[in-house]
Image (cartoon, rainbow, N blue to C red; front, side, top):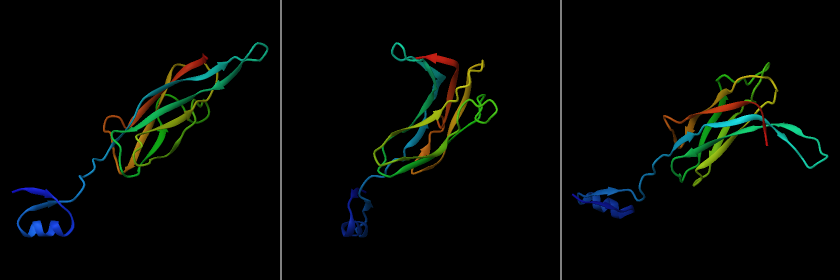
Length: 159
């Protein structure tokens, strides 16, 4: 038996004659959503031209969130920071917690989530936290890469 790609009345006629009709347009493969790991210093010392004071600024970390393949539909996924050895609440806060929803327009395959660091000048070891992806719409979560790890390098790095 042969399968033909036809639409409309022609599909009905083909089925009536004993053939198989397949809808026009192949089924779209749902993309997997993944997040990478990242690392960031607590902050930077920025030096200006001679005569200008040095200043210290807190750093940010950027997590890359990606779709495994483009979609013709709008894709969304909720994200939130959590857990690990770094703290997101006072006292001793290391990073500012973030949460929200990323929206990928049709054809887009990459977005970033920015996590602000808190500059504290405390002597402490390297710490970690996580960015968790959940509740995808029009996509699936990558089973092995839907939680990213952020590493905060202790101390101030020089720029």
